[in-house]
Length: 587
Image (tube, rainbow, N blue to C red; front, side, top):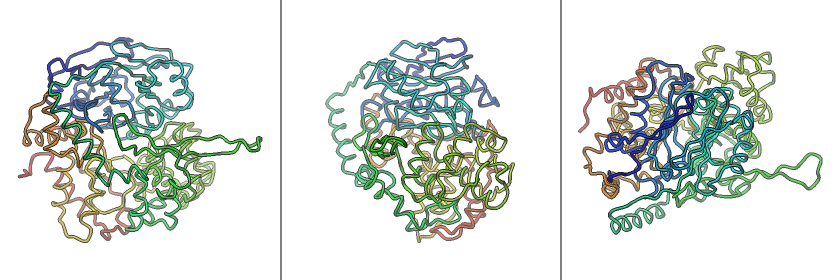
C-alpha cells in the first residue's frame, strides 16, 4: 500500500471510559486490503469467545477499502459484530455516504467497544472524537433523531449520520442502523448492539484528501471503469426501475415467495411490480456517494390530514425488491400504498424489513393453524391486511406480552416456542430473502457466511442453469468459488451491482494504482482465506453445519427446478463444508 496511507489508521473508541486512540495497522490492511478482510481480523482480535452479543465487550467494527474515493461504486462500509439474531457472525453492509465519510475523516476502520451508562451519540470529525449526552433523542423515532442531528451538527454535504430507532433501544434482535435517510445496515441486528451500548447515533465527517502517485494511469483507468459501468444494461435497468424490476420475472418463473411461501406465484404481482411503483409513486432517485447509477428509488407517499381538507403530508420512502417481497407478496399485500405505509412504520422504528416481513408471515400462518390465538396476538393477523401488520410491528417493538417479546427474537425462536418450525423460514436463524428459485438459492442461504442471498448469489446460479443438469458437488463448488471472490470485492467495498466490471484482472490493475502488488493466484487465495476466517469465528461461537435446519416448506412448494430434495441439499452442504475445511481442493 502507499507509504503513510491513512487507510491504515484504525480509530478505537471505548464508550465505557469515554476515551479514544488511533493505531496504525498497516499489517492488517497490507494483507487483507480492508472491508470484510480487515473487519474479520479485528473482530477476531476484539471479541472474546462465547460472550453474550449484548455484553459491552462485543465490538462494533466499521471498515472501508483502498479504492474508496478513488474509483466509482467503491461505496460500501462493512460492519462486523457478534450478531444477537444468530449468536455468531454479524456482518452487514451499507452505502450512502458512510464509506467516503470514514475515508475522508482519515480512517480505514473504526472499532467501538464498551457501553455507556446513559444514552449518548458520538461525533467524529477528522482526529476529534466527542461523546455527547443523547438523552434528548433517546426514545425518538429514527426520523426525529436524524433531523435533530442534521440541525445541530456541522458537516452538511460530507457527513454521514448513523442512528437507530426505538427497535434498537428495545433490543429487537433484528433492529437495523439507518445511514443518512435511505440506506441501512439492515441485517443481523446491528441496531440492537447499538442499543445495548446506549449508542443512539454516530456522526462522521472529514476533509482529508487522497493521494494518487500514478496520476496519468489513474485517470485513464478511472475513465475506463466509469464508461464500463455506464454501458451495463443490468445497471441501466436498476437506474430506471430499481431492483423491483425483478418482481415480474421472478413471479413469471414461479420463484416469488408468496403468503409465507405457501406458493411462489402472486396473482396480483402486477400491482406491486417495479413498473407499477415507478408509474404511481416514484418521486426521486438517489445515488450513494461516488456512484453514477442511482438505484435508490424513493416513493412519494401523499396522505391527507384527517381534519384539514386539501392538506396533505408527503413522505419519501425508499423501496426495493427485497422490501416489496417481504412486506408485499410474502404477506399477501397487493395494495402498493399499504406496502409503503407498512414500510414507513418499519423505517421509523428502525427494523430490518426482510426479517420483519418473514416474522409476520409466520405469525399469520401460525394464527391460521391455531398455534397462536388472539390471546397472544391481541388482534387478528390476516393476509393482505396491512393495518393489522402495522399494529403488530409496533407491538414487536413495545413488546406488551410474552408473544411479542418472543417475536422480537426472530422467527426461529418464535417457532421453537409456539410450533410451526416446518414453515418458519429462517436459515442459520436469519430470515430468508425473496428467492425461491431452486437449490442454489437455498444452499446459499444455508452455507453463506451471512446466510444472505448476497453471499454467493445462488439465485443467479438457479436461473442460469434452469433446465440443465448439475450435481450437488457442481453446485457447492460454484457457490464456494463465487463467495470466495466476493470476499475480495467486499474487502474493497465494491457494490456487488458492479461485480462484472470489477473482474479479477481489473481489480489487480486498480490495486497496483492504489499501491498494492498482487497476482491472480494470491488474490484468489486471499478470498478463500478471508471466507475461512469468517467461518472460524462462526464455529467458535457455536455454528454447526450439522445442526442447520431446513424448513419443510421449501421442499413442499414447487420451485422452477421442480420439487427440491433435502438429500440433495444436505449433500451439497457437506461438500461446501469440506471445501471450507480444505478437504477438497480446487484446480
